[in-house]
Amino acid sequence: MLYTKRKTMKIWKEILKAAARGQSLPFDADALMSLAREQATKAGNRGEVPIGAVLWSEGRILLSASNQRERKTRTAGHAEIELLDKYNSLYGTWRLPPDSVVVVTLEPCLMCTGALLQARASKIIYGCKDTKNAGLRLVQQQIESGVFDHTVTIQSGVQEKQCAEMLSKFFQDRRRQKA
Image (cartoon, rainbow, N blue to C red; front, side, top):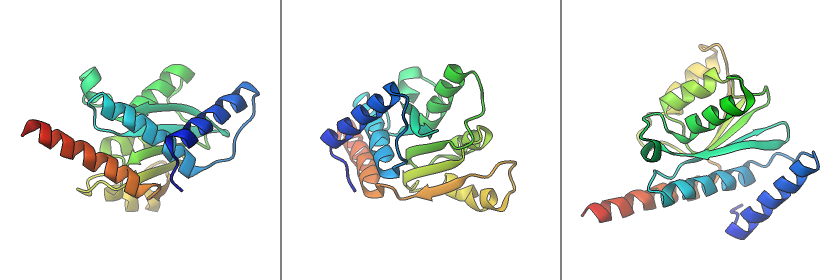
């Protein structure tokens, strides 16, 4: 299901109301991906590669983030790393909660995959695949076979078409500007 901007705003309002009442909301990967896409749009509007991420745990959204490499002139300014940095600062711990789900619009690169493994994410959900096959899928077999000291559940293809189109449009526009 594709969420419109109006539906996404409604989701945010429901989340904020539930948080104010101390309630949790049921897990909805599609709704979370819509929120991650909203973060990606913000990044794209700033001239960043449009990638967004959301952290879900204990029945609520804990944080969201977007790419900030250009803005912060930081090599590791990927959305997933920004999300983990925010979490670390806010909660004073490197370890994510046991039921944490990270939702990101693009398949995490190897750096981000490693960071999410080290942070002990329980599940990673991503929208579109890395077209160069140089990300999470490259080490997915090792992750699933227990080579690392932590395993994570992986789900791909949530709003895949919309996530891929957002990235394609961004790079097409960028090429046009350079021409």
